[in-house]
Image (cartoon, rainbow, N blue to C red; front, side, top):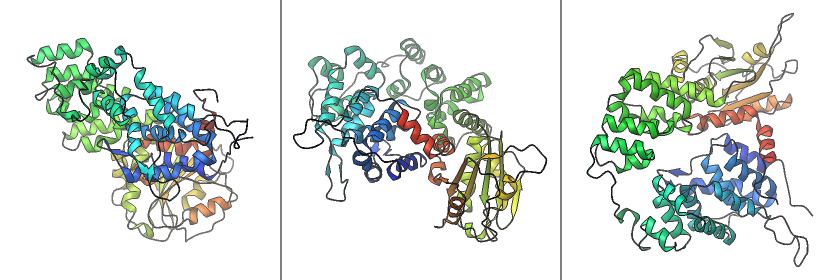
Length: 505
């Protein structure tokens, strides 16, 4: 006997979650209960209807190309509730289901203490998979696997976790799982009693009494983790301390603490600034999407340079496209209330995709080419400045010209065609049967509810991919959402299903 498996709606729900950049489940380290309940409701059917896919999703989320920590947490948690639990297929039967829950247990090895504490916090989360009363859903086997994670911590590993600033997360895990640490572990954690608030436990400051130069030397000598070193400082860091912090910081951390370096004048020093920007381009990932927020009050020339760095970083993360991409922006009258959002989405796409193998246009009832080649998001906004919404809507006005093969001339068709539109096609023919088809057709739907464009595409054998506009609004996973959409839904699903499981089941 086999476990159930399906290839349609539940798997596509995962794809939709990825192309919405997996809405953040935590804000300022606080669980957003409504968001996580919505995500759990979307993915829970996999536990019963498609347990093999869920197991592969958990492995792919933890060890594959996925960058969403939230999806990793959700997939590992839900897979621990899988119907593939090692029990008999029928009562008192001899044939047993594979124990797919073991996949989640094995993947705990990839969790850092912060992720473990977040998973442990699900012990208190009440939710309903079937519309009934909310209750807790935390299997005993997952709790036991997490207890084994904690009991297997060596003193060497524990000291590394403490140096990385994970002390409060480890204490939270012990408390949430109701596990008492061994005496030597408790001593290192300064875990005195269960009811003492974490922020009330006194900790000796290793920087006490040291000069700025001595602090910088200590950071460099011990390769002290950036976040821990910064949290220990009891005064504004001086340039000499910041120079030491720079050496141990990641690109993401440099972006988050950008104002510290700018305020100290370090970004006005050409030699330091060059190293600073290079490190961001080399090591930054999701935090580049926060530049507009963290760089609000810095000097214009530094902001402009950071915008270029962001574009280069995003384009490197996306990688070179293996074909041409065309972006088509709806400026018809029905877009009046959505034109600003459409411009923002277009600008972010330009920032990520870059000018190579890229073209773009606008349409209402007619087609309008855009000749500017955007280098950054800001250049794209400049090219779109003053564009107003008016006229009827012909979503295929540019498509007909761009996809048509010129007579007696070499032709490289557009591989990726992207519309930013409300889909209200009300002018012009629907027939595109004579035209070549793009390999991937993407719709960023903005504005009112309408699906005329997608209906036309499906009538001609083109299944459109939807990229959610919120995924392009400075989400922490903009590049991944775009990359996922460009690859197409079945390619991602196939990649997930082919990802190896960490245990034999």
